Image (cartoon, rainbow, N blue to C red):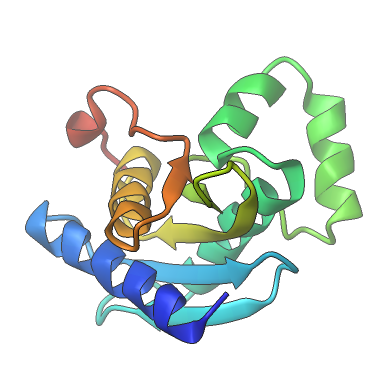
Length: 151
């Protein structure tokens, strides 16, 4: 993934967060191999937010679906969730805010993870950032009522 694309995603994600009045965010963009291309942390974003954002993106990339969908599918499968967490050395955080970056043909070229506000709000900002870069996010739309989510 070109650095310029990753920077566009990160900057647009943070801009969407500011426009929506979200708490300070941290955004991590991973390439298809799971390597960090960009990490940006707004002033006031907590000290663990980078690790959380990376875990959301890593989980989405590793499972091939957005982290909200992972959470929903694993609700009734705690043993499998624990196994994935162990297999990924703890780099698997199955809550909203991890979004796949897909080309028009559906192929994933990376993932973005966001942390700092309620997870549904993090996901909203991530989706906006992916769209701003001209890519297709997975999931394509934030959950209905994301604006009402709270920490």
